Length: 399
Image (cartoon, rainbow, N blue to C red; front, top):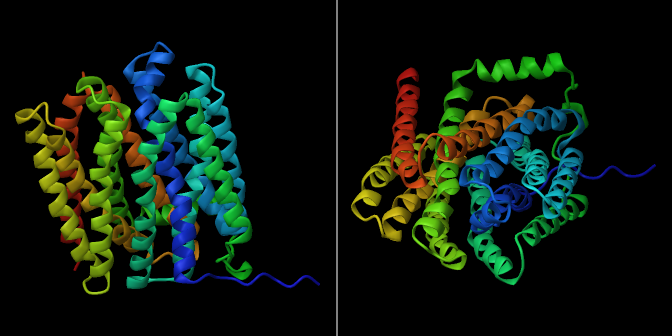
């Protein structure tokens, strides 16, 4: 009889594998963001249609998590991860050979469906093994690993664009997906024991989601995640058009400007990781709210007073990213704390709120405003106010 593979992983291995799985999501955004204006030109379409390649990706990403999480509660984290990342590789290859915008939309949809496993499964793997401050610390480590991809991807995308066409960017994404498949095959261990698995049926899935959505302890932290990432993906969709089209930056200069965002996120993660062992998660959320307030004020004023300044835009971007580094692990751990028995469903639904927020943010940025700069100075301050409002309601309802 073949011996059973041991269950569970160390905190470090969990963080590394979870971080690399989650990193696939932003890789699929930031690697090709310098090429968005080029894609628009190649297909002879509009800026709004170009931004829809982000929106289609987010829609599939958000919805697929609602399937991925319950499947992992039934079949285990590792097996479901292998299946979904194989789908991601397929979507990347479809996008790589896309002869038209419609085929690119299809590739982005399939990509988004497959990559949904990264967020849902990484959080479930953490919740399977860790709780409390230890879970916050590991989620912070996952976020820290996550920062490497946005730091490198825009620069790599710019180099690819200089050396060839944007199609090769999706070949690189496919290669990253294959690397994740190899890591899951030979480096990961299952974290959900067979005796803890729950049947997969529509009635059980809907019952679990109804339980989560009816719990304020889950709902409020998840709303905070959704709003925070709505802001992030809102300006992610807008910045290439502001910097490259409006201000005349080259794709490489754009990538260099985006390093400020990454540095801020890294500093925020280091600070959050240090404080996670010393203060409560609610204090970390308070720090994030102060950052969002300052960032919202910056977005509302600095681009108007200094319209030709890159710093006037990147300063509030950096402050927002600093805030996300604090709120993401704290809100995630708070949302999932009481739902260990359905960690896959809870991880999927927190991911749905997070990515769904990105979907709404990118869709609003691309469709509700006459131009990218107007969207930036209106949408981001509004999201900051909504985030502070939700957090205030959450504090008032608690004893």
